[in-house]
Length: 471
Ligand SMILES: *[C@@H]1O[C@H](CO)[C@@H](O)[C@H](O)[C@H]1NC(C)=O
Ligand SMILES: *[C@@H]1O[C@H](CO)[C@@H](O)[C@H](O)[C@H]1NC(C)=O
Ligand SMILES: [Zn+2]
Image (cartoon, rainbow, N blue to C red):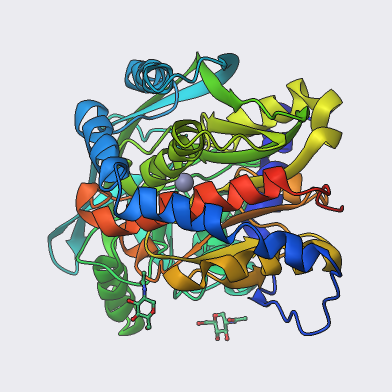
């Protein structure tokens, strides 16, 4: 029997440390025969969807609805009443569009609430530093922890540092952002590893390529057999300041005060079906997560993702474009604290997983769409690449290969079920990710219209093709 936290650690390790070699798919040796013509024959319907969304009655609608939602609820952390009320609101929004096949499925989720968080450097000089506790971090004693900081660049260096140099100190990890999946391990595993060496708390340079002195939070996990210690992110600016002082041989001392509570609540995954007219049991899933961090407004992560996934069945229903297979929009709950909603869904729907024809997720921004990041065998990718050719007019024809695209859906795509995440022009995504800066100002009407049109038309074609997507 694994303990819950060990299973959770495994999940996080699989999800955070996958190191995909992502590259542009080369379709030169694809041979799809008559399927090429069949796919090309969707061009008029693609144009209809694009026109309806970019210049017709749906123009601006995705942004407007996202803004109304974000302005009404703001942050929607796992376990909160705000999240549950935002789920009820989305159900009404689907109903108002005549989509009545809506069900919710209950999931036990954590409610982790941060209280006061204060970090003050007082040696070699006094400076107050912005911090954000990491998900499910334990609190410090009431009057805080006062200790010296040890700066660590990477886990190899941590291992090589004698325990007595770490014991009783606060470890500060200062990895330089390369890619998210490569760098995020210092956030997710840093506290557990520092605690194993005797540290009393763990700080991490925010996992971001750019900063205006803003800390970025995110999930982290403790491991069995080591004392859980307080864990927080600090800004790039403060991390670099401490590193410079430390490298000059200065003793850096800080006081860290953190307070938080952790409880359990019930949340819901939301499933909305636009039933297929020939094979309703077969599914093409479009999805995003409705929960967010407690900082920021969850507009980008993942408000945009849930609203392009809301738009897909809505637009198809309005245009009376009903595909052969069912389009299921899913709003996952509790993604941020460890993909909790999607795991519950997978378990509850094990018996129909063979019916998932294709699973899509948008959770890396809804900037201008560029195409898809997809897994699957060679034929699958040839089909997806052929479908993407229909999106040259909006510059969204690129297919990137990945073994397990997506965040939530990676638990399906990682097992070989074909799927894709939205490939978009998201070079600035990690500027705003998990910060107070995740607001409506990151989103634009044009990009959400493009994203909604693209998402809707891709899902429609794949759900309507004469053949299933091969596994
Ligand atoms: C780890 O950090 C140390 C100290 O900064 C550095 O010398 C070493 O090259 C780093 N190792 C890796 C694998 O990056
Ligand atoms: C697609 O790219 C072309 C060439 O760069 C540009 O003129 C056009 O505006 C782009 N279209 C969209 C929808 O972004
Ligand atoms: Zn997200």
